[in-house]
Image (cartoon, rainbow, N blue to C red; front, side, top):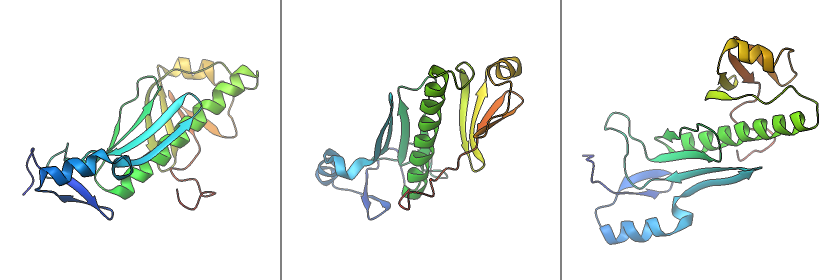
Length: 169
């Protein structure tokens, strides 16, 4: 039975209850046990960790967290399974790559001025940046691009959650 004080370790890819606090502490001290992904993309660091406890509920447990360090307004993404955590990590790497590429294109005069997202969603059809307003989106991205499209006040980068050129992603 799950409760708020229950400790977990990973056995293979599955979180399992660990009754022995000393074993749990030893497991959690080893970075290779808790680091699911740590990827630097420009100024951003995408970090995915196993938490060692359930920060969710019995109905929807949360054992993993992905964060983009250095991103404006970033909200961590949570996952129940290791597979979901890996998907979240790769999706956030894709988001970071899209932002870094856009910033470089702006600096080189190849793209419109930078945009300020209010929210970022990683969905199967691409990375969705919800911008401050439809007017802001139209001003920043007046013309359609080959790697993105404007949908009202949502800018959608047309990249998938997983990079098919990397078989392990």
